[in-house]
Length: 243
Length: 114
Image (cartoon, rainbow over all chains, first blue to last red; front, side, top):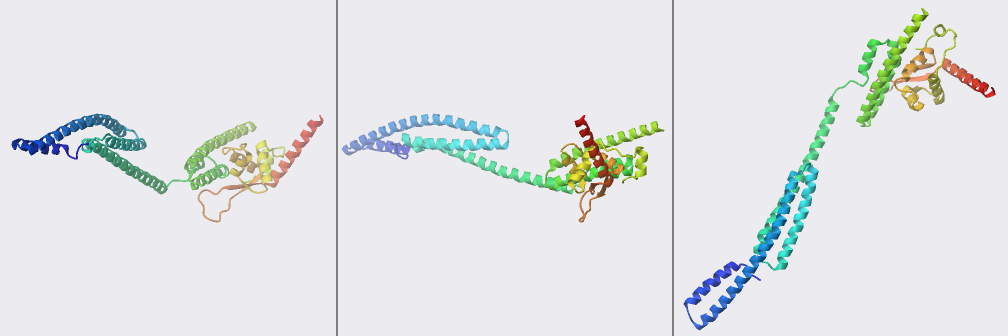
């Protein structure tokens, strides 16, 4: 295993070797031999560690690429929920990979400071992903509140709007063209039923049913007006033949 | 709303007002319910035989003939909308309906013996 700071140690050893070389005594010769041996071992270990770290970095570079693809996919995703789902997936993915990297680094005996850069970049990425997820969560709340506000505003506006009860225009039309007796006996009851059904549906909060009722009664009015015209025409024809 | 018997006789020289199948259906429903009915109730009770666009034309014609009588629904509290109309069978309507039923029954019996 390498020490905590092998570069520094090698530097110290080299300086020591230089010193020992100047004062040539039997004790120094023994110390010099030991220092050189230690330096060689350190160099070998250092070299081996660098090779291992290189392979690590290459391996995790592919992970990083995958993570970047995820992030790009998230940014390019259409629709909020799709994006949120992808970010959640990405966070889970990065977390798994980070754990794998840390475990691999520990198991392989590679010095932490060599792989720490890779691990650190993964950690940063995870933090960013989590931040993105939080912001998306916040965005979701904002969207929900906005929707609720918009709905309330719409309801408020629809309440504030003054509208004539359904069938009023039809009644005005029939009052102009038909006798008061026909209006009273035929058209007013239709309008009364229309309003009764329409307001009943609105009271129950069934707006679409209220619209459907209006459509049906519009048709009923057209039919009744047509029928009344036909009857009047037939009566007129009969009266002509009777003289 | 109902017209006088003289006027009805003038319109129909035989003196007996005619009752169509739809009119008989309405009178039958009014007799069965044993109470005044709204037009909408009749539509629902007819099971699709009466329509929103035609029922009031028929009821108006029946009122002209004197088969039914109508009044506006009483309202104790102020309510939204036009008051609806309640219909009930008149004495004439009941008589004609009974006669029609008897005639139909007799005709069916005759057909059965023939």
